[in-house]
Length: 259
Length: 307
Image 1 (spheres, rainbow over the protein chains, first blue to last red):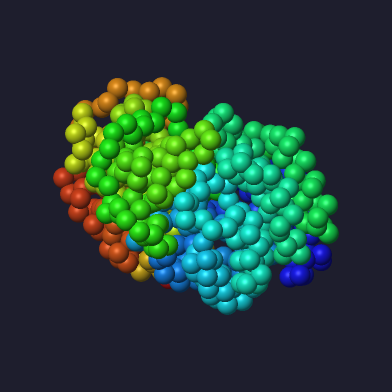
Image 2 (image 1 turned 135 degrees about the vertical axis):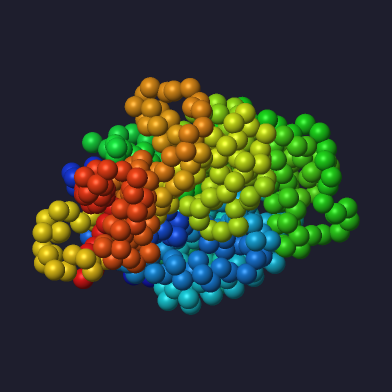
């Protein structure tokens, strides 16, 4: 329990993917815990939940969402939050996370993690919304730094300052994706260690690592293929700054077989 | 009558935080109509509306802003212009939703061909943008959409989409196990006439103008067939446990299942079946009524007996 929220260090986890359901249940591989994509288990009464129920009986589960849209200027979706809370209770999820981003506006959802402008206005807006979500959930929310491909002309601070101030003011937890730090550092030209040095590590409750795709002019957070050495080195640097944080490998495309 | 398991659905589309990419997506090359913003600073709301307007513009249409205007919102990098940076999100938006439709409609994609299906998908995304947090039901309008599109065989495409969408719905419907003949054996004989049956909660009976189930099955078996001529069929789609089933139904089974689903007793339901067979020889009627009920049970269409 090295973080201020007393959330446990679960060890090494994997993202739960449908292609692995049967193998997991039949072979019960030695994985410390699984992270689920929350939205895959919302708005369904059927088979996805059947599998989740069985897997959650065997392994610790953490929820990771992509539709909270914490930065959107649309009102918070109370129905979505209710469903999220019910799913957390059903799966006995250890915590709930989502991204520092917005996914849509004016009632439309792009289902993409769109970048925030890092301004005082945006910071105040997100702080209020994180507090509201935490009040609703009755638990700390962990926010992840997204990969980004664009920076706003109106930015008045860098992402790490925004994230650090947000975490302090909203009293929320952080999910540090070191691959995203690496991807954004290449896309925007900053030193990833500067990013790490600025973060309040007592609020970091989970790490992500993943593969990415380098297009030469920019890097895409594709979650394809193995993690490259510089990202592992960044994970090591983050690990040294923490006192024991669970690590999760994200792999979403061209998945290896579960053996 | 054959009951076919649909093994595809384990791989139903998943949400992910990765940025999807799709090869060959067309790029905007010209200027469309720009959102109204020429002077002053934008607030957060306006920034998001402006950004979303570009991201959701179809990729075969010009970007709705000039490079200079894009630069007022998004900075350029050492390697990419402002518009090119926003275009990464634009491509990701369309790629993710196309992936979702491909996952829901793999056989329709096969029938139309990859390029035509992608064109159809891009038009679908523009016509039916997502307005909720889940992608589970994003593809729900595809059948009706196919009927309005300039496709070679819109009726066939719509029926195929109807069948594939029923498979998706069965996956998300509540899970139920089927009753079997051993359960029937527990019912005292005097209770049979008044017995009612709960049909599987995932069951959907489709009335189709084309034999799309046979087409889908041929595709699954790796023996793709030519687009079939029109022929009316009734197909039940339902799930027991982890397995999704497709079952072509004879008219007698449709009558019995629909009757029981409405709450009729077994006696009343079988009477409706009997009425349907009134032109058959008497010994044939009894045989067919019995077969109809037994086949419905053995196919797993009922989940409970209500006495």
